[in-house]
Image (cartoon, rainbow, N blue to C red; front, side, top):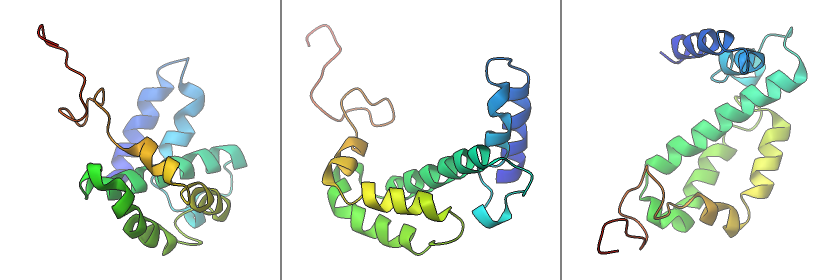
Length: 130
């Protein structure tokens, strides 16, 4: 499950001197805000929880047609708002909801022609005829 994924990620980052300082962030990136160990420093807790929030928003976006992002934002916001207090940090929720009130935020999440996760969107061609 997700905890095994987090533990594997932590172990991989610990093996890389450049990234080892982020291993605890990865270890707890699927842990609810209220369940984070009290021994974690506040920066690690917030970064872990930020990844968790971002992952949840991305998962909700993936359930919809990404080309209709402006329409689906209300459903996504409604779902995320139901998590006030847990599993996400209250200050992260406040920042997210404030930022997500802007159409620009959602348009920046829409797929582009260069987006490898959404091939075929946009108008850029990379073949010999393009």
